Image 1 (cartoon, each protein chain N blue to C red):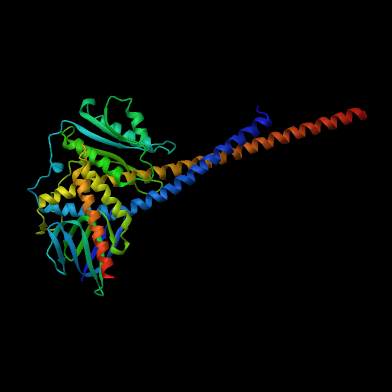
Image 2 (image 1 turned 90 degrees about the vertical axis):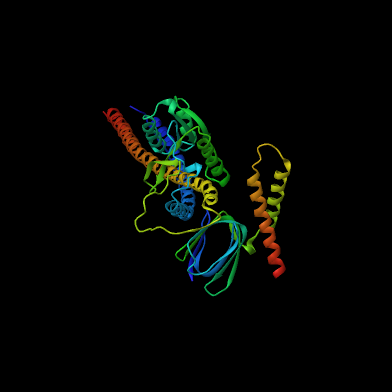
Length: 136
Length: 287
């Protein structure tokens, strides 16, 4: 068991003792168990799975950020995060269209990396939404 | 000697002013509450991110990111944060006073300004220093797009070599009645060099490499800093406005009280005078 806190610029999103988690690291998904070695990693948009004290699995959709593991204290700084059930499908679709349009337009002064991350975030949300639908 | 009518008119006008200041006090109180919630809720993120960055820089000494690069200072950037509107006591005056003291140490050509808030803009547009960037009307509902715009603007200013360091002057919110005008370095980002007391060297695993993490983390860190100083400033501004409008309401109250007293005295005097006239008239008729 170790302490996990997930904070976003707006608030502390989640704070509790947890058993384990699987996070979307920039080099691929990685799991963190108790007594994990110190680690700092960037997170990419993806699914965050947390097993709480009762071994119940919680699923989140992360929109990128950072994770630090230090002495059984895990901190996730997330740009955006929500419970998978809270995904706003319409909003994600709109964001995806917007990002695609921006990338297609080939105008000058388009922030391509930004549009790419927006696209990836939207894709992740849609993907996770589908996943939760098929499960139920 | 003012007449009864004059006095009544004055009392009425002060009552009108009092109503306005009272309303402004209440609006400021509501905005303060909102700004405070925002400030409080973004503090955990800020402190965690600061801690993460400190941990990082403490453990990697060799690595230098462009935003952390210490250059010989030829030009300095100064960000001055004031409010857009007045009637908030000495709030803007205090900020500008400190900014002027800061600027006194530099020749006009050695500093460029970035102003946030209309008050700073109107003040410094009449001064010799160059205003390179201005951000007005940020309003109560500060959103990420605005923060990002400001943060990126400042970063660009630094990276383009136009300035070699950037300071921010803002007000740190202490309580509703107190705020402290603070000058802080924004760029370059200072490296945590001291071994940090209890914190010992930690052999972190980095994924991907530290270089990449820095590249991702530092822009976010800058945005967080901008967001925090703005949140602190807004809270101070509304606190200051609430207090000064409260004082104005109280002053109006005192004035009304005083004038009412004068009015009553005058009224009494005139009644007495009239009575006196009637009785003397009656006496004269009798006689």
